[in-house]
Length: 132
Image (cartoon, rainbow, N blue to C red; front, top):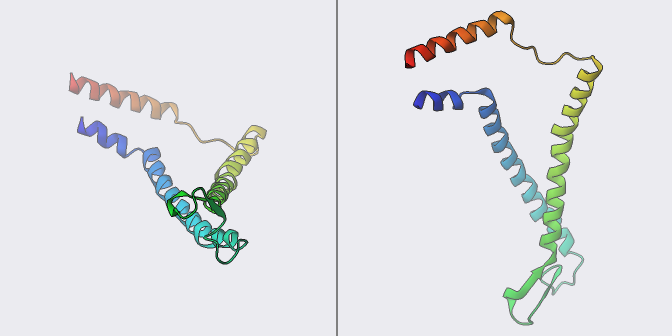
């Protein structure tokens, strides 16, 4: 059971996925900091000096009823920036590679040879015989 879990963790795609998640979270934090600390103050700059920002208070005198429109606009800008980066860094290059492969300009990933497949089958059969 532990060996199976170890094999699962050591697969290349699981490690790559973990790295992608960590990088994605870090990038999201950078974009959030940019939109919160740069974009939101610029949006709030269009309001009068005595105003708490771009928004409104539902019940006057009760600060907990303040609807912060600038925060919503900032979140939308944050989403759009992350989506743009994902598109231009991941989706567009993958589509270009896929199109080149379809046109025959670039070979696809090399598959295993017959000898490699037979060796893998042999090893799996040996493992299966040992566990029985």
